[in-house]
Amino acid sequence: MGRKVLRAILFYNPAARGPRSGLERKLESIASRFRAHNSLLDTVAIEGPGHVLETGEDRCSRGYDLLIAWGGDGTVNEVGNVASRLQLPIGILPGGTINLLADELGIPSSFELACEVLLTGKRRTLKAGRADGRLFFAMAGIGFDAEVCRKVSATSKRLLGSLAFVATGLRALPFYGFPTISVHCDGISFNGTQIILSNIPRYACSLRLAPAADPSGPALDLGVLKAYSAFGYLGFFAQLLLFGLHSRPPEWTHYKGWTFALTSNDPVPVQLDGEPHGTLPMDFEVVPDALEALVSQDPPP
Image 1 (cartoon, rainbow, N blue to C red):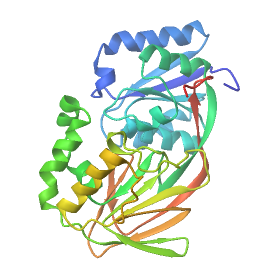
Image 2: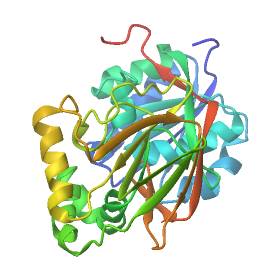
Image 3: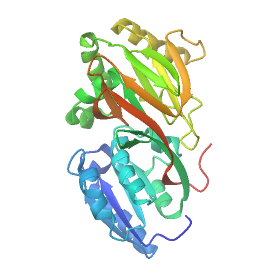
């Protein structure tokens, strides 16, 4: 890091899969590591979705040098939004249902190694997307994936992990209407039924849906899927699992852009980093240099 961490605050989700395992022991392990580096660590248990966004800015404006998110992409999203507003770096301890951003940044899945990054890592500047004032760092999904994020329960995520999204999606798919979504991107228009704005290459189930996406690059990757039935939707993702995007499926359009205006005649749901975020219409934009994240000094290839 560019300067020594003197005081850090760690937000953890007690219900997440990582923190639930040996919670007290792991919290003490992190605190002892900070003490060994002559640094202080405060910890805050997250009470539920939105808790960090509601209380974090007031807590974190009291002289902290680093904000730490221990959980999945949803926890990282909330802590990252607060860190961005306060212009403080964020450290990530992977521990939730899905950790796409942590994986992309090369943060070790090992608890011990990830703790070392908090104290010895270097800073990497990331851009973000923004939707109605809320930043997202991995992706925004508009359409059926957001419907799944809206319906999946916290209990199923605790019990099944990422499979909870698959199970919820299979139950919801026959009843989803696949309404048309209109996208206006930097003067160009598209229509589809599922829109994905990617800041990183990988999507749900680690699918490489946007291979050229770069969280430090200038633009977001826009993916537009035209699938007007459950059969068409499943067919596209089955093809993606088997062959990737090499076959260039005709129902999939890819583009890079900076500003996006999305509308629909229906209340199509939106998700940001796997968490529900209202319905269309909604505007999206790129936010350069939105966040600094701690990454390994020598990240894996």
